[in-house]
Image (cartoon, rainbow, N blue to C red; front, side, top):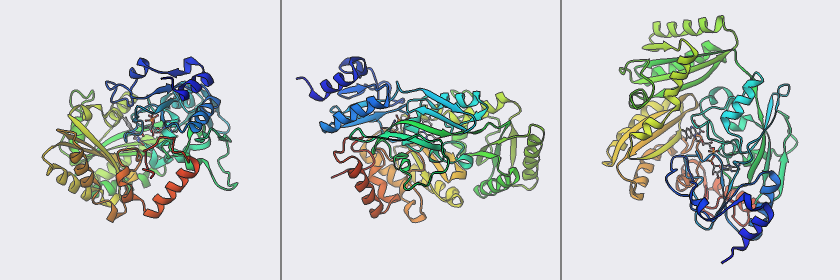
Length: 464
Ligand SMILES: Cc1cc2nc3c(=O)[nH]c(=O)nc-3n(C[C@H](O)[C@H](O)[C@H](O)COP(=O)(O)OP(=O)(O)OC[C@H]3O[C@@H](n4cnc5c(N)ncnc54)[C@H](O)[C@@H]3O)c2cc1C
């Protein structure tokens, strides 16, 4: 039977932009599941905002559900599909349109890959500060749609703080474009904020103007060993104050995580011995090649003397810096140790992290199917990740693990998602982080912007 929507889409976009049949099966819905064939009616490959507008206009007319695909690196099932859905993949819209060194902005299409955006800024002596392990695959559209955080939020904020202008196509094909390079624009509602972090449920992001900063002249990193969590909090305050604004990353790893990321098959050997209870990897981006290393070294020595920290090893070269950060960025050795995994990115008040994480880990190990628990995260942002290895994948076990991790959060004002979003995996737990009134308003917004519920249906919210 000929599918009218696909026929119309093929007519509007041209055959080369519409994949159907076996070529769809050669694709996948996530970079970690390349062995699983994509299930979808078709994959659409728009080349421009006008193409996206045509697609959505047709899909809206025919009440046809669409799922948006970026770099497929999200960790919440946001790009999972069903057989009746069509996929819009932004991969062909990967242009870096302009780097404006004076306005300190970069203008990109949604399919531009983060690492390419970083490199384009670097060529002009500027820095696009967003950084995380999936930078070689994640696309700016997906990153904006998930309001990703990463390793430098402490200094530069989440993606939201780095988006200056945005172009989005609404569910009915209307283009909402505000591609200005203005850092300040208080002319009524800041509509782009609606789409940042909306995980493709309110519109398809097609282009963006992003904020750049002057590139640092110095980068200094060190790995630090500490004995207790109170020291971690004290060291964060001490080093942040001492560095006076140049501290850019402060990443915490618990011993099992540090061990697995520094023993084969991991590519990096351990810079510090396996005898501490906490390991902190820190990064300072500064401007003075003479005084910055002296100040950094002096602060580490003072912290050792004051017994705020037990041990420290500074990176001696650019190669060392890369080596140290590979430990934190390459999570593959952790995932490789697990038969099945479940991931979390919870937010909780910084002073409570030590106690609550220890309690959650203990509770998790009471579940017989839980084999490994790796904990690490952006502690200065109050954001801890869990990678949990388990022997099976039943819904009962998934729920039991979810409850164990989320149980303490409501009473301490925590969040079930610091940065990965809600997608499919966390939507049943949204009420832990958001009030009924907030969820109701989210539903109202969704129904107003996408009344036929065609955009990423079933993601974030289940509409009745
Ligand atoms: C190894 C690894 C490390 C990571 N580290 C971090 C980290 O430190 N911090 C962090 O915040 N996240 C991290 N992530 C997850 C992070 O959310 C994603 O990497 C990224 O933000 C998503 O970009 P993507 O292009 O892969 O989007 P996808 O995974 O393709 O999509 C993400 C969501 O956005 C939607 N979407 C995609 N493109 C668009 C568009 N153009 N318009 C509207 N909606 C769209 C999709 O439908 C989906 O719901 C990590 C992931 C991995 C695999």
